Length: 114
Image (cartoon, rainbow, N blue to C red; front, side, top):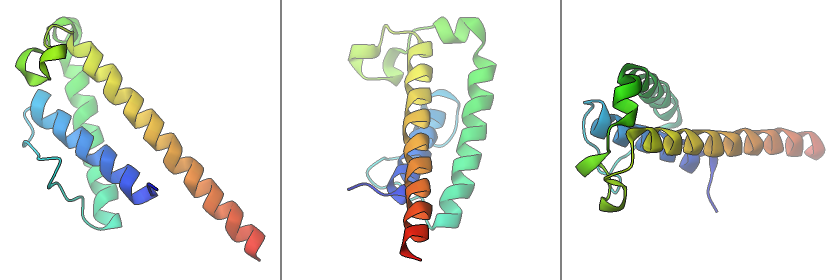
């Protein structure tokens, strides 16, 4: 079972990884990356998301169209950078929505326990 903490950590690590590969941020190792406490994770999510948005905005049309090359697995080397931007966006939407749902369920279950 995955938790809110896991989902937020997954988003932070994914954004940090993409920022490291595509936008000059520090490289991270997904196997050892630790997002820290809940407060630290939320702060890092804001920081990594802001860096991601700034990086994507700075790509321009040419940057989005260029091949991913050796920045991605060989199967995606010829795919445009826009593909990884879309994939990362889907991850953010998907796991962000799950976090919202779990929070809603938690609040709803607390009301039922009263």
